[in-house]
Length: 319
Image (cartoon, rainbow, N blue to C red):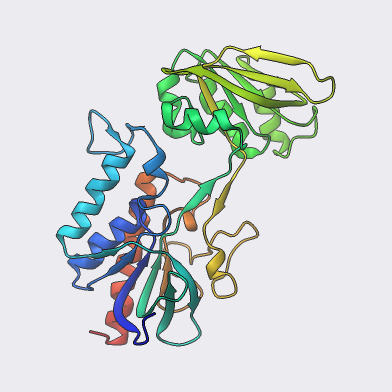
């Protein structure tokens, strides 16, 4: 266990597009950033296959490869990238205290950029996890709907996001099955969003329905087994894409009590900035964005975080 705290001008907590972009900008501003990558280095993109909607990759790129390129670019400018995760923080003073790997290392930082992201909630079915890696199961219709143009797909969920994504998919896909656990009129989504999906011709809502199994082979998903939770009746649907839209959980628990959050745990930032309620602490990426949740918007907010941190250090006269 380290008994002498390390002191750094800029600490970045978490990796992914937001963290790595923050690192690139912070390093180029001579802030000598230290990054702890967290329990999932590279973030959600490391479990994403093809990425085709990030500018600069005209032929697309695999998510893990993309994150390796981001990492290499941050290292090129001498970002100190480390394995490990932040287990405790103390933001009570002008110097922010952070403990890594259950206290093995203590960091004192003039600025902290939180880029811990958010994790998609999953159904917990074994086959769901299997086809996340093989292909065919996704938690982002906007990211992956393009791959299923003209095909039949299913989406699980009953909130506004699920309705929005079902409607989005309906413009690309031949048919969209919407799997809803409760009955008609019991969706969590706003009435306006419910009416939108109910009035879309190629969306079929399966009420009182739950997914028993995602079906497929070595080439990906080709169906799903659905159970009616009122009658017990099982039904097989033929699909090629299976989307899960039951919510995300921001990875922000360690900051509770220090940073202002909304009721879902997303860090609240001053509009138009990455500033939190604590001076010198900035939040970027999916840890504070529950609306867009795209790699390109996360990267943009990472840039904002580094610029805000650099301006903060300059204003405080910290060199």
